Length: 577
Image (cartoon, rainbow, N blue to C red):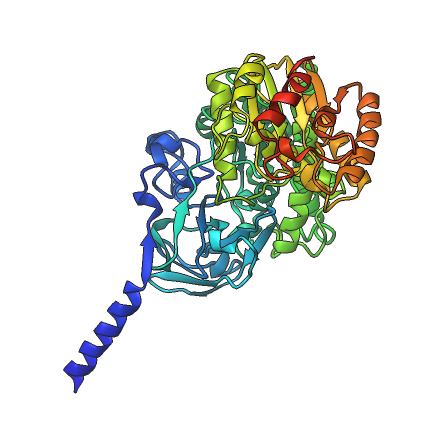
């Protein structure tokens, strides 16, 4: 009976595995491991420093750089179930940090409106670690799949990993994002101690909110502002450097700390003009009951702030400071004397993100129209993130003289990057291309989606002569007039911040079938707001109306999008100013 039992077991096991398709991120044609520096060197391994660093940094720093803290893998999948299996090289947990944080993974999904959702996964820890996810949330677009982010272990080294979906389902890895990263150099807290799971490290919480790549170079007990590490950091063309090393600077006098901090900033400034943020020691849980602990971190903070003042007097530009008082960690926000709990990580992330948004000029309002967010409402037509990356690449290749920002009405007009369809090729080529316009329209975009794109560099790195904004029609059915007006005002401020020399024209929302009266009233308000903002307003859509104030359906393909003749009528008014 035993041979028969074994045969039956093997057959069942084989059948179960045959029902799953497994994907290995290290066996892709292009790098897909996010939040790494030096992707060309290490983009298919789960480490944080390139091999040449082994001879340039201390052995313990090199060893810690093998941990995958901050790394993530993004993918699309329409699977109702997802499995992750992998092995690690180190101990699964620590006395003050659970296996789920030290060695676990964490998965989030985004719905079609860009809202992020935590995905709980059952798990088992052993020689091979396994996570199991059931995706039961339904939406109209679920058959086309969600966008997933899988965050890797904070304090362990991943040897190999596979992501599995049922054989009838699909999984597509998202290539490494090409936007400039934030680079964090810090301590065990920066690395993620003592978060209960990877996505609860303060740096990852902030990364999920800002949605910039963030390279985590936190080295437990060994973030010491060392020249060897800083040399590698300066190789990265970052949008911001964060130095959070004070807790690991031991046995130094005030003059020594001042010199260490100043030398670190000067070393970065030798090659980079990127903003630098210095962060105070966040303090200790027992500072109120142990005066020696209070005095130790307070003196470090005093010393670093004196270094900051000295740098300012020297004329060093674009350096910023986040104080202990601004961090303001709650008394219950610790696991031990210095490492935050998830509660503390949340508080620290909020404080640092607030400062980062001030530095990078990324304000967020209280309305949905003033909150930057991605979307994926038309994956059957195009991939929103892929188009964003294509636009960034095109702007680097061919500097835009003029830009038009919008939704599908713009996207499907014409020009490059090529959209899924072109409804007005002739007028685009004769009018818009002649004026040098780049098409930055995205199908089904709303005001808040354009805000995200502006915050993510679509108007950065060049000086445009003209910018046309034609957005808002997809907000009409879900937002009040006031929300739309304030969203457009907020958006114009973001545009002006990045393109101060450009002439800016706002096109009134084009008329829509059965919405003509509402849109006419709304455009009157938009006109008044635009005038106060010292921009140009044009109601190009009047050319698409009949004498009865209703749309001329012969000028539309579907009651919303103009056809070739409709685009021909509105193109001159939009392009010329």
